[in-house]
Length: 411
Image 1 (cartoon, helix red, strand yellow):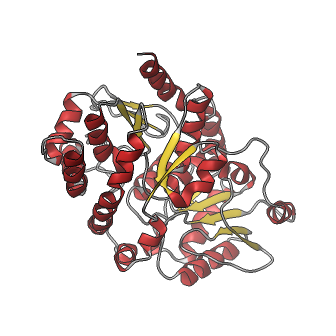
Image 2: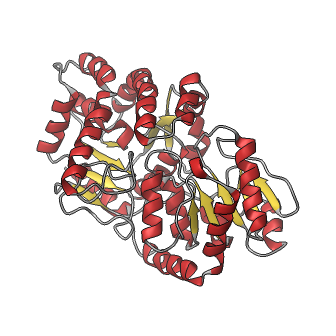
Image 3: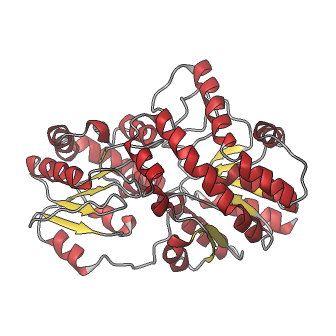
């Protein structure tokens, strides 16, 4: 079960395929707009009655786009999440009623665990970001830095409580629907912690080491790569563009929706040309467009097929695109805008595969051009990226999840 943007769904196609290869019947419970992604992986789909892209185009969604701080974004996304959870609750229950095991993303962990409890089903978390409070770093959805171990933990607990509170109306409905007594969101979290409810994290410990102060049930297993059909080729126009000159730079904001797409696209183009680089610009949910012999505008493409051919990747630093760039072994220039993007940007910089972020709120063509020059002319960034990619390829992040589900199936 997962709700959110494309990046909140795509990794589960790879995890789902691994489970299917192990003999399990897998249904991805998510938004119907991602049906092509799910069906291409050969998985079942139970569609949820919310279109996240449409929600981001509402007045509340546009207010989120214009929010400039992590706390402000968290407050505005809360209103969207609260209403969406209520609308999705009944379909989540219906999907669970036909299941034997529930695997829950962070966006549906609180609600899904309650559903699993009410139906007597085993469940596990399958998270793409670190959400549990830790002294190792401040809450990733709020900031990229650290406020010291004590404040980090206190802030992490406060953010966790704020996120849990978003699901109170939906939890009340679900608990009544399943005959469970009323229970507050904080009490529900304490129950999960006392049970040491297992949560697998789908990122590499090479990128984010497991915090030493996490409880035992929280593991960092390695990436779950989105499913890409074996032998999948890029479209002919993309292959032709790649062959027509030196490796280009990818520019994309993924599922982030930001205001003034024309202004953003023009800034990206000026930066590319100032750095003497060709560019492949992905429209994404923001709707970027660029024209010229040195530019190609594209829609969704499999990152695994495209990224290895690039000089660098300019992206919004979502968890999925960050992982794709690391897997390809190419330097990155993140332009973080929302939530955990600043956290992943800081990780890329610390790993030495990026010269540093150029936050979208302070984005200028000269600043981005300078970062691109460093990323593409200093061989250290590429050599470190390629060395890390080789180590990531040795990991199988799906194996611990498959083993856990196998144990449940054999119980």
